[in-house]
Image 1 (cartoon, rainbow, N blue to C red):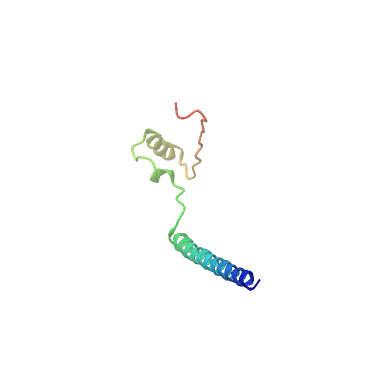
Image 2: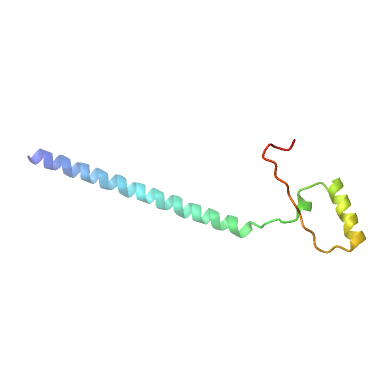
Length: 88
């Protein structure tokens, strides 16, 4: 009877140690992830100008620049068409 009780105590101690170690690991990962996300947030910015993604001499932009001059356009609207089948 005494041996079984000792074995149960050892199992309980092992279980407690394992749970504590796992908890510490999870907390460490959360802290590192939060710090990483904070650094990214400070240095990130959203780019909304399509001109920064396309070549300057792209025909659509050349025509857009001409239209801005002709009609004195100050604001622009971009329409995107999404095709489920792909680009062809």
